[in-house]
Image 1 (cartoon, rainbow, N blue to C red):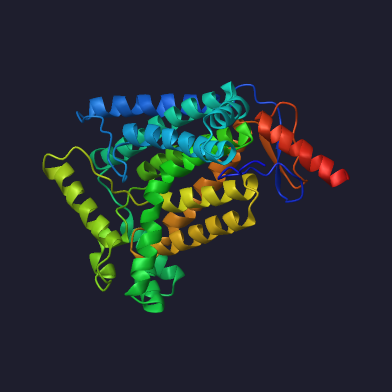
Image 2: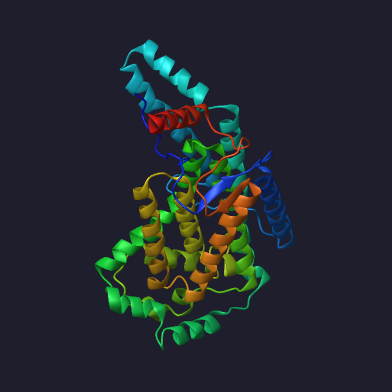
Length: 377
């Protein structure tokens, strides 16, 4: 009897639309090129603007160069330890045999390549994104918040999204609930990359996920420079002045202080940019990837609920205008589709299909064989 992985990829038929797999000889190629390009741009921009390349902190596990390897190592332990304990029953010989079997069937060369290249590529893209975002006010000092707020008020019949939602939902307990959702995004960015890379039983889905993530962060960086904004809560602070004190409001205050230090003090980093909403983009991308690569309907629904609540939170706390969220959703769809294309997946309305070019781990192949035998009996 085998213990399940925390994330199980659905390789069965029956849920349209489904990815149709084609040969992808180098599924890592787009991620590597993307990481190299945005990484080089970061060093060039930092040198021209005489600013250091920073590795901004933003997680309960510290800076990125510590966070991602730690999460990867922790995921490997979480993958091996339950199986060792389950099969070994504390017997040293059986425990060692269980670990060797898992390493042989799951931690293949293809898996190790996915984990090492995937995490390294994601790390470069994410840190480059944070640095280029930080440099934005040094490159463009114009802002389009007034125009986007006018659009908000036209769409909502004279209302601002933040105050409208606060009137509808209240400013007490709701603020704490939405704050928890909004802040959970920060550690989930790294955690979910690790989950998809380590536990996707279909290696191709891991490449799809991490490549799409890199595309989304890159497109988000481009959107910041195309239409610079601060966001309604920073530009018009009275819109959120009635909220009960909460962790998300504290985060907004800290970003204001760091921006001021970056522009007029000795700070090396600032993290303010409004258009487009990367919270919306990444949350929607998670939901889309779960819809197409995760078997559990419950997990899929959780990601869709998280996406909906995240959109509400971005407006409720004044982080974003409505147009920011629309642009974020567009980024997610582009990243999802393009990530599928460049890693050898084709979205179709047919049932799930797979070609010989799509790599799986040996355990997923044996699992599929058992499922086929069961269905034919």
